Image (cartoon, rainbow, N blue to C red):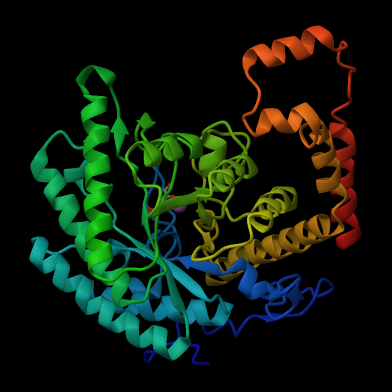
Length: 447
Ligand code: XUL
Ligand code: CO
């Protein structure tokens, strides 16, 4: 279980297993705050945070952007054929997972195995790579947080996958999802994710939105039924995002997805995978999206990253914002913590970060940020000062007529009569500044 590299080749020879050295360390390849076995409340940081590395940005993205090609040259790409390259990539991936000491990873089918000449060949490629992944999971102890199917990169999906106006394309998407669910089950994945990048529209003029949404729901029902028949006990997750690549995506934000899941009767099997940068693209905050999902009892998992406040696209940067991490982890902890979900870094190092060490440093920063976030959030909640003040704002609903209103005993006429016979309400301060200062005080006294 302690193996740090698997094949004949070590892809990150300059990096040893990353250890915890504490806040005073000046070693960039060490954790300053993430002390995996440290107990916070009744769980260790490792158990609370359930970190996962994403395969796509970390091993498949190479720094290209719409204006220029790859800047990052990886040794694992130097193979003679696609399957050999996929194997090198997998060896490099498991070396990084175990050197970081993360318990989980996540993949799209096409990250793991190359697309073949037809559906059957693609399925075979994936099965082959799944067998190799099984061996590597066993020997490093890394587990699969979730699998998914890439239903957005291939040109056939340009008009959508499950919401494509062409039924033939939908059958290809279904074939891919079936194989990706099989792969997830074979690897003991704890969740299965749907992110609908091209499930939306570019123009309302050529789109039957109602028909497309019905198709999407039917598609998800079939995937759910297949997964359950095959013995998948984990959680299906939908990852909201408002736009990019589509002008408008159906899974716009948490509340849109919650309404969709409930409308189509999918809310018993599906929860939400909230991504920080998707929240900001929808005009919300990370904590808002988490809170909406948690309030609905549908908070499943997190894709942790950040955007850039100066631009409006999905920059997928490693999270470093402690304030955001604190507010996010407060929601997760109040919700009782993760069950099958975890914290996946759907993040990539910058195009200009071309050294192998940068990949480790990005993850270390993200893990340290969320370790601080978790510890501060735990202190705030354990002290109870903030939650007590928040609860007190609603005290008038805890007794008398307020409580009778909550339990449905009063009519609109009753409320009218209470107002008529009562007094003008007193102005009560919302004290937002007090709450904000309190959070800062917890952060600064925790560091
Ligand atoms: C895209 C995105 C995806 C999903 C998985 O913005 O977040 O990587 O997480 O398909
Ligand atoms: Co994501």
